[in-house]
Length: 306
Image 1 (cartoon, one colour):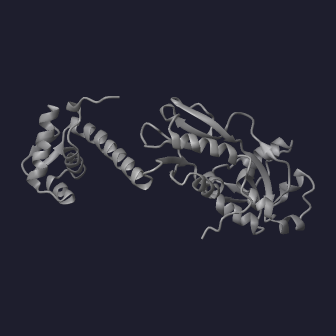
Image 2 (cartoon, one colour; image 1 turned 120 degrees about the vertical axis):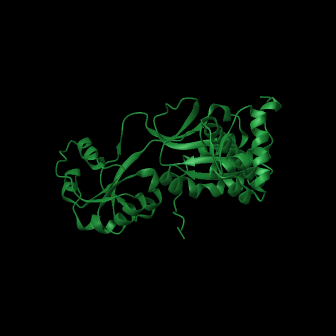
C-alpha cells in the first residue's frame, strides 16, 4: 500500500505534537524532547499548516487541545508506539524478525514457557516477545502478531488453529489420598475442596457430571492457579485443575488423580489466533509449525521458578 507523501508529516513534528498533547504544555514537552519552547511551538504551527486545522487552542499562557487535536493525538500516539515497537523488534532480531505474542497468563507460563527454549534453539534468528492478557485481545488496537486465547473461535478478521481442549481432573497430594478412602466420586463430597475464583462452580459441574447432587459444596477459595496448586501439593485439599497444566506434577506424583476426568462439551479450547493479514508472516508460520509439534510432547519437568 503506497502512501501519499502529503499525508505523512515529518516525524519530528509528530513527536513534538504528541509530547505537547500529552502534557498540554509546550514548555514541558520541550524539556522532555530536549528542544526549546519556541521549537515546539514552531513544530505545532507547521503541523497545523500542513493539516489545515488547528490542533491547540491558545489562551493567554496556556494551551489546550481542540476536539480534532484530541482525536489526532490518539491516532498519532498509537502510530508512534507501533513504529517504536517495530524498531525495537528489528534491533532485537535484525536477521530473522520478531513474533509479538499475546498469551493468557497461566497457560503461557506453565505450558508454553518451558517449551520456548526449544523454539529458540531451532530458530535463533527469531525473537519471541510475550505479553500476558487476561482479557480478550484486540489486534486492531495492539501491535500483536498472534495470541493464545481460551474460548470459541468466533473472532472476526482472524484465522486460528486449535492447540488443545481443557480436560479437568480432580487431584490432591499422595499423602491426602492415603489418608482418605476416595473410592468413588461421592467420597469427595466431604473432603476439603479448593476452588478457583475464575471457576467458582467447577466442582458443582464435576459432581453433576458424575450424577451427584452438589448442594453441600464448601472449601477454600483461591484467586491464583499457582496458589491452589501449591496448596493441593501440600495436602491442603482437593483441586480441580486443567490436566495440560499439571502434567509435570502428575508425572512426578506430587499430585495424583482421584476421580474421573471431566471435559466440557463444545468448541471452547485453547487456540492460536492471528490476523488474516499475518498468515504469511514467516516468524508466525514457523511458530505455528513448531507449536503443532509441541502439542503431542508435554514437558515432564517444571522449571525452577527462581
